[in-house]
Image 1 (cartoon, rainbow, N blue to C red):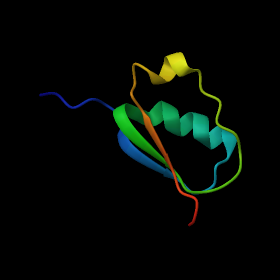
Image 2: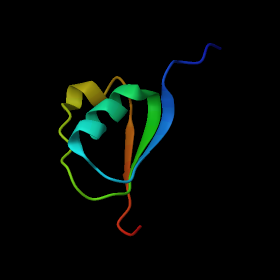
Image 3: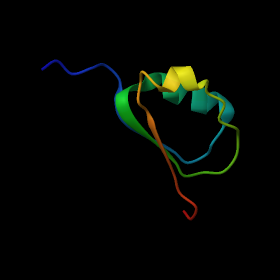
Image 4: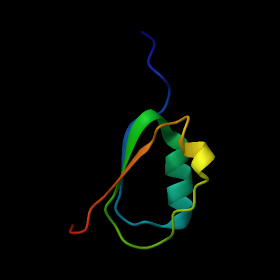
Length: 62
């Protein structure tokens, strides 16, 4: 089985908008994006998330 290119997980401790977009682009299919920091705004078209199956997980307390 061939491994897909890209990261399997990402931890975002800041939440800066430009970093959000670039990190999402680095993730491979069925990966995890852990949102730890506060700030910025996540705007992603739903149609871009369906085929990639990226999981967004947030954390209320550091």
